[in-house]
Amino acid sequence: MKILFASDMSFNYMASFPGREAARETMREAAGVFRTADFSVVNLENIFGVRAAHEPITKSGPNLISDEAFIEYVDALSPSVVGLANNHTKDYGEGPMYHTMDMLRARGYQVIGAGKNIAEAYRPAVLEKDGRRVAVIAICENEFGIASEGVSGTAGYRLGLAAKAIFEAKASGALPVIYFHGGNERNPFPSPGKLELYRHFVDLGAAAVVAMHTHCPQGCETYRGAPIVYSMGNFFFPPNRVGGDARFSTWCMGYMTMLDFADDGSVSMELIPYKFDHENHTLLQGAEKEKLLAYVRELSAPLGDGAQMRRYFDSWCMIAGIGVGNQLSYLGAVCDFRAGMLDELAELVHTKNVFSCEAHNELIRRSLDLVYEGKREEALAGVEEIYRLQNFAL
Image (cartoon, rainbow, N blue to C red; front, side, top):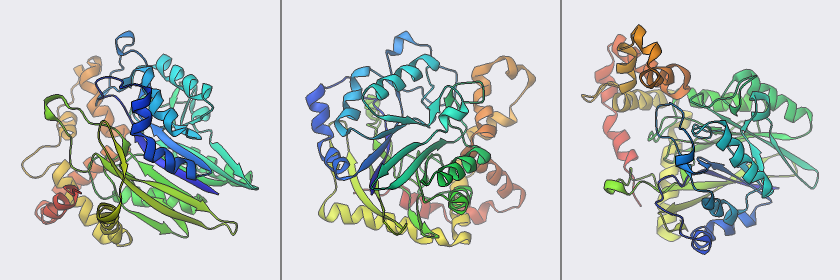
């Protein structure tokens, strides 16, 4: 049984819907890959609705939404499952989230990663063929719009709930796959915390872990026979053209992951690389394909070296954190905390995100450790290597 996994789709920065035929032409090559799989999964990183008709929630980062017509891009792929476990599903509150879920279900797609409470958000999609069953469990980091026992939203990471979902899937005869949305944006390497967490999912019984969110490709490995993909990069997330903002070089490239579940219980993976812009989503061929796959191999090579991965993360802390003459904005928010901020929600959200989002929390904790341990200069030694890998281009 083959299941194709793709990562984040968002249309928030596209100026206008180009029409049904143009949308389908854009997705034509990717749709062909989707059709080669028995089942397919994609993550939708914005909800559908009229922006002016809804009040955005107060949060750090942008609030993403797009016109309903953009669902044609999803329909062009006709995925089996659409994941909503991410940091933008509840950007405009409960109503647009439910409306988007209804639109997806009306088209026959299973929807995972969001719901009326945390239990529903953790409910997996179960895919079955020829007696083999796979349960896809969508989880995201704890940023904004997270569900709880009595609140709707997304499936924010909780180890107990993740373990329960894995155990229940196995007890039902299904192989669990964790579909995770998290990590440090723009970092070409997963953090030590993500290495530990994704491998722990396998220790608990997951047959594979497939992740995204970083807006750039990261590496992959096989751990105890289970594929782990640390980040596929963006799937289709055309950047903001206003002011010439093209984001960074790896924003518009990535890879899909085809997992093949064999009769003997083994799971193999194939990486399918691509690039995209506002009008095109193109499968890479020839020299471009080999170049991106070689880049992913380079990112994957040190994953088994814990000491090297810690050094890379220390250098990342100097880039995204306290080094290179820049103060970590989150650190500034924490240090500037004052009682009055409790009544100023817009000011409080950055501080909240430091403590609630696992990726931000790990970054700031390690950044502070580097200062406390007097290791800033040592960490700076690897910054140029991170910059080199971060600025990969086809």
